[in-house]
Length: 306
Image (cartoon, rainbow, N blue to C red):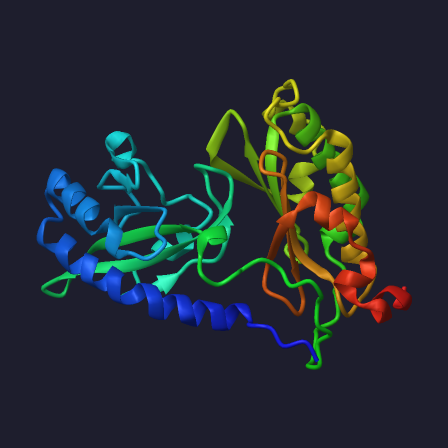
């Protein structure tokens, strides 16, 4: 039996590693919270104390950034005042009174999978906001890349219920392929059970748009995304995008017991994500994803089931 460290165990180790430094930093920041320049200096001085940190910044309780971005390159004040409340990881910014780690998401700055540590800032029982530290998961001490083999679940797995997206999956994948190839959409996230699709466009990369299947299939949908030349910095060509989307479709419909719950593709960094009924989200390059046989994801029994 293959023994592997689960994502849950990794998160516990990361919490133990990061929480003390983040708590200490939040106490220093609480003393100068109302002074942005002083806040930047504290973040910059304490930055080396946060293990493996890529970027650190302060956010108020409404999701507005109140400090500069602080990294190894120093202090960048250009990011002060930006609204982070609609970022994909904004669920981490809800007013909780304890340290937490976000889910893995794609960085808006460099396009790589990352994770954020979020520490509330509290002064005399008054909740002020958060300190957020971003980490590139490639540089963390514990690998958070997908396992080479997917274990077969021994517990109860709910059977797939046909969703609206499942009923129109061929049309949905065709529209997504067109939007990516011809309309500057560079990243899309598909939630199959809820029949929701999230899109990011090159011309407005800090905002995402959420669509129901009916909206995506509306004949006027293309007007929301004007035609655009395929981006030169894309690492995935349109034919690869089509193949990835086709594989998403197959993995969703092949089995009623082991099936795809969500998936994403990013043509700039060439990454895809997969979330199955029995696994936490997995991130890997598209070329590796396409090189794998279905049995590598679902198990031979699931493949034969269809």
